[in-house]
Image (cartoon, rainbow, N blue to C red; front, side, top):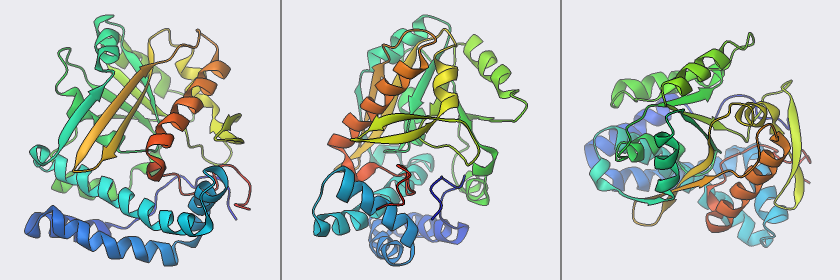
Length: 294
């Protein structure tokens, strides 16, 4: 089995078209109803993904066998909800959802320093709707998201065609490291640079850290970079709650400058705490711990 993330997420343009059509013609309720069947389909046919998330529930969270199997379905369903919500919010349905800030003062204080900041997030919850939170900040800012070129797929192009154009600026990771200059330019404009720290592609440098009771591999780049930029670093997660409610958490990192190891440890602990509250919203459907899912 492939243990690394392959650089792209599962899904097709057709699948997104079906959800967008259902949502716009019949409402969010119908889109969520269709999702019940889609989640079941993934349980049956996305076997590698299901095996990986089963390991997470069974071995790391210590759920029963039955509880782990049920949680696989629930995880796919919640993941689908976050995708539908992202499209809905970007299509002008922001008022159908409610939002809550937790640690907003940390983001405000970062922007007041006028040297930008780094947000370290993860593939949990629904971070891509964070720009709709930041629109309510007193200190206005722009967001740049560091991403892999392989993630720019036909799906993203399709979503751009049916939703309001995102204000997020994508900075592509390049082999010649020119993305470093783009990051520094964004910070100089007092902008926020968001980096996810929980996925690496095969061949990339990685570091290990205890995560939910077992050593796991994390990409080295985000932590080396964030610890050397001399700007505030925050851990930020946007989590889905009941009743179409989203909760943004923002916490300041305490690790010292150039201490990437301490930053990684703090990050892993922060993600683990979030998952204690929202265990179904871990959306890394691959062999994250490199165990062969045994």
